[in-house]
Image (cartoon, rainbow, N blue to C red):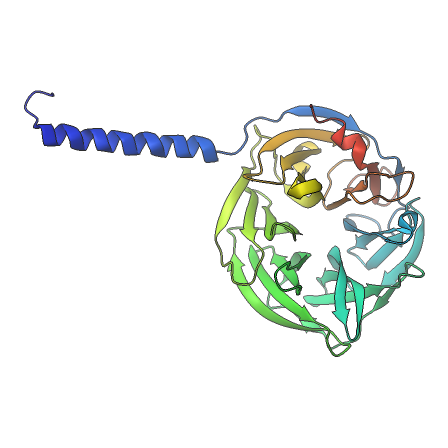
Length: 353
């Protein structure tokens, strides 16, 4: 017993020490990954034709998978200075939808438009802060505009993504802003025209663009560019509760700016989260399950300063039997910016074990 202290006092001090130790252990468990684990490099098997506009124009891709003929799938790439480009898997531009300044693009199958399910493509248009929508003609792979009044957002939109709730089947559009604002709009197409209703709004501390929803796990991932990656719930009533996936710092796996995010779904809920670490031209992998533990980082040869990315693990024909990773190339030499396409199994082959 400490001199001059009662047994009750000693017990109190012991309890405080135990609480402090538990707190320290909790901090250790929840502290994100440290310095980067370098896994190696992969090379694109092909690249898309450059976007029509020069300068910093290409931004974010999405992948539409043709379930009947996977080799006919399409890559959708935003040209934020003038429209949306549609490419085949050889990288040839097969369609260009001119108009507006779409920054990020996403796609979800099974959206109910009138009496039929469609593949819905959505982008946030920075020219008028609205949601722009198209459907994919499954026979031709061509996009066509969706009828409906302009769907105006309540923020100056920057990034965006879609979410399909496994609980209700409803599709939501998430929009983010340079001020760190986030809005969730629930989309409805029951009468053949799409309407939108805002169901949620919250705020991060600073500029936020990268956005992806993991439908199966009901999770929303956001990249706060100078800060790191956060995980939120994706349902309208999930509020602003969040978990930090990783922080961005010069000595860590994510080097600012933190940009595009994609979900590579695996069996039984497994797979990876892929994040663009623009500050050191690398891509960080995290486990899709649990606390999103950091796995390691890799580079894509010839690709620098990546903004947006997308990934699918669904087969895309003989060239991409395990899916593909599509990344924006921010420095394409003397040509306009484009998108590189990497077989997904080339990435997973880098992961030990």
